Length: 245
Image (cartoon, rainbow, N blue to C red):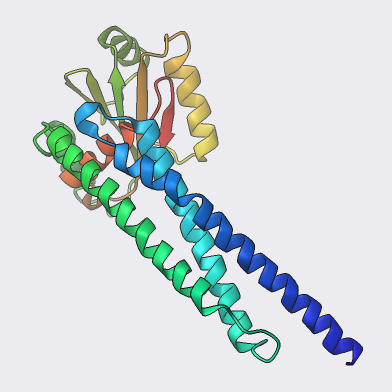
């Protein structure tokens, strides 16, 4: 056997070990993932932390599946003369893929049902939508911000006092919620914008409020569904934090 063939066999063995390691990683985490999805029940109280963890784990597992399939493809094609893949392990990997997918779908259905109950009939800030149409009329592109804060009413009042509105800006209040449209805002990097907002609005606030900021350039990009999306994301934001979209 030539030195080149020896090196190839060693490389193939390394790929096989990586494939088996990925397989065991996926398999060993299935029971815990399934339990997380099954116990997620918004009827007993919605947990944004649990929802976020399930989504992050599913994203991670999907990346592992992609890694395993790439390794399988490489071994089947480029190195097919050096290795024989275990067909049973391949079947098990595909079965695990559909098992994960089924459990995640169960979680998604529960979350969607909760979102429809929580946000489907929720009154949206119609003045914000109407004002958007006005300020974008004749302006194909115009940088603006939509901000939504939720939390303790007294803390929201503090934020309202601190956020000085310009002549094209607007504020609209809902129950334990306040919306702002800031028109013609100079675009900033997310990290800089976040730092400025925390310093200007949240300094001294006791953590009983949270917010989401949507950066827009076209008014037509904002619909009622866009605002519902803001509320869905806001449900997962921790108190005392602001998320930039």
